[in-house]
Length: 526
Image (tube, rainbow, N blue to C red; front, top):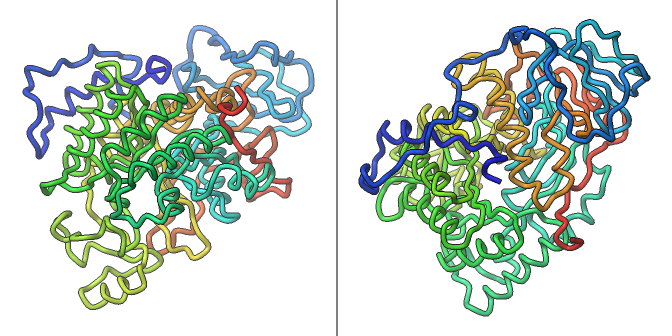
């Protein structure tokens, strides 16, 4: 699985030497993995047309039985764009033929006759990519997923935990209820509430056993992973985390964790939180995914945090992480995360901004915001806290948000993926375009496809893959959402195709019936 995910670990030794705020194992006891040019991050962005090879490159094929001759008519054709399939490395001007909900042809020969189709999209000058997979989102709500579609997302996975039992959740979200696909993880925090536990309560042995059985049942009934957030539920014991990791390993799904600490003030630091997760992966054999490492687990000590995870990957442990491309996080003021916030994060009232407003807080206005338990952004990260994880091969992109109708949300809910492509690829050249697209497509697909068969055909742009496709302008793609107004559609996302049907065009959303499907585990049917 690690080989399939293409997790580069060569860069972690360099990242580690960039410094940290906490001592770790002696450097001489650490062994860096050998360099892997195929997975190491590039140093410059590439947004222009790729250099023409001597001849048309091999066409990526996932399922030969789905291939259709290019002289036959298709339902939809996307022609003349720069087609990038991060799974195979294909990067060439080509045309895509779609029959039904499946990619049936990829034509890269400039001498070949043009594809014929009932509907044709001219993608000249545009990038054609697999639809983006948002690994770290929440439940569809009938509103926010439309903004995700406008950000190029075709699959919305609530691996940050879904607040219901699996049977009830899928009943509430039937196929066709969303414009994009959906699924996610059993949420330990929700199950704690079902058992009457307050955030600082620790589950007794019998209660923990019952919660573990509930987790197993949710996996059998369709959820594709387990989620825990010990920072928000401080009563979650180390034993409970290990027990859930063991259940994840037992069923071949990841344990996704909002780590226990998000600051560097002892006792309880970011690096201790990361070490706890490395230990869980080592002790149980589970795949442990570190959620939004820029805001929890790596803030201020990012090079060392990535180094520890990279060392674990080099050791053979199964670990990944994700990042959202903003240097501020947001949550509710009465949550445990905001306890002692000034001391923990070294920030003041002026570093806080209530979502949906344009003003920073003062000591007086903070009291009002606290009384309302407002979702509030905290400017508590440095640029390196985002740059470094974007350059690490085992890190993917996840938004950690979905827009609510109240608009009291972080702008990552609507602009996450376009911001990576516009600000971090085109403008700042932190990573190149194919590497960025891999973090949005094939890496999340491979993380979860082991027990979610539907994802075996997503995150790819090859013959036989599902026709979930995003077409964007690399010269103009950008996020437009802000803390004050997060309900802004991204710029430069030109076309989005879901299940072979155009769901988003340059004119806006189409009138077709929503094509999103529930993505379930096969644990209960295997």
